[in-house]
Image 1: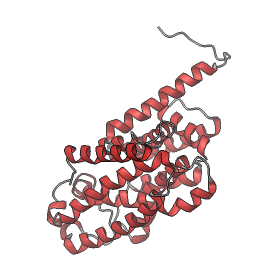
Image 2: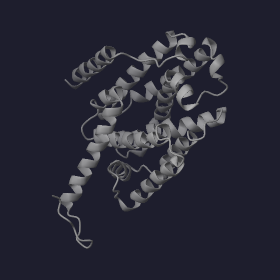
Image 3: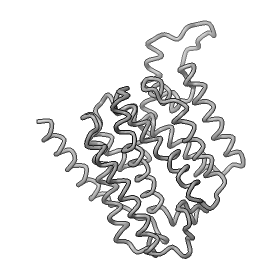
Image 4: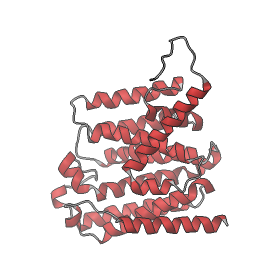
Length: 292
């Protein structure tokens, strides 16, 4: 049975460390539970980086839950309350929400502030009111929902090195954008039928064709070209994991490229488990060879 603590009794360093460790483990559980492909790639991050990537992904995932799976009329308020809690916890260094707790510990350590957090929540809020995406709305959504996540991770990868961060910033943004656009194309059928969303500007779901698909894929390939250059310049602790994720999403993009638009509008396109495993083991072998 847990013991009670009086309001004036200070929290000991041991208890604080325990709560922090548990908070990071909660975010790890969320990461591995929601994404087998991304979860596999995280195993290639160095041990000092891994918890922080879980922390970022954990917050992103629970915010996404608020707009994608919660059907309450107060979904906007739920999302707003989460954002407010993140800002408050950034100031005091503490939250009773373990996912927020792990995120703010990471954010405060690596300088992830409102300039990256606010655009993310703004993009999540756009999902609450489905509307046709203009080019401007699309670019704003991509920046907030994906590019800033790449920048948050980059802050962790470079360990506060501002010069290196500035050098790799465009690559991190391009990689986040590429991942998100691949997700939009892969999930096009479910996004439209279940959530009433079509993210690509100027696209009408019912008339989506191979010409429109090829234009989208060409744009994604351009993003990947920029991202690959930056990925090759990442620090050793993060490079192999990022390159594995690029390889996985690159394979998914190739599959989408070969898949007729009529099929994309009917079902979600996937890379099977065996193919994922092969990509992962190849990445592990490459890492071990380079470390030898």
